[in-house]
Image (cartoon, rainbow, N blue to C red; front, side, top):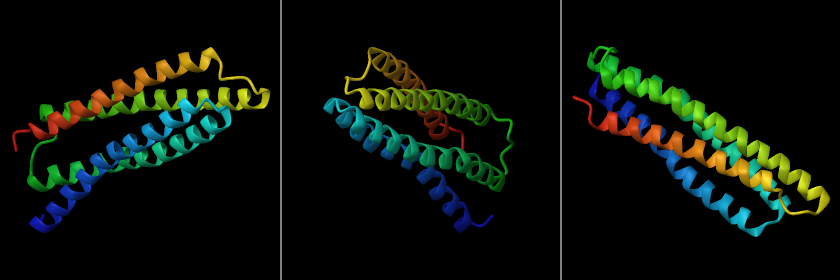
Length: 157
């Protein structure tokens, strides 16, 4: 592997790791603003946009990170059985599961917001409970991603 292709892979790998973080900040702000407004229609629309954008960005990262990571490790000649590689692969799987649980909660809240929109009532207490569980799954997923970043930065190479 040439140095230019290795640097290109590093850039792609870094963009795939950073882009979801930046998007999450923007999407969280957009969702928080919509939630504070209290309008069920706006909340449902915001959650749909957040869910779709989150799926595209996170699915793209989840798909590209192992591929670019493997190509970099293979190009350098490191064995795949190293602890930091195995740990980060396992954490990526766990983070993905937590992300799927989080997004399923978003879709449930969106359904509750759509139901509340038709009746003109405020979003139910159940939506708040779903939001709290979803937030817990989100935080757990984020912690896994931070742990992966720590493993990647502190690797022996």
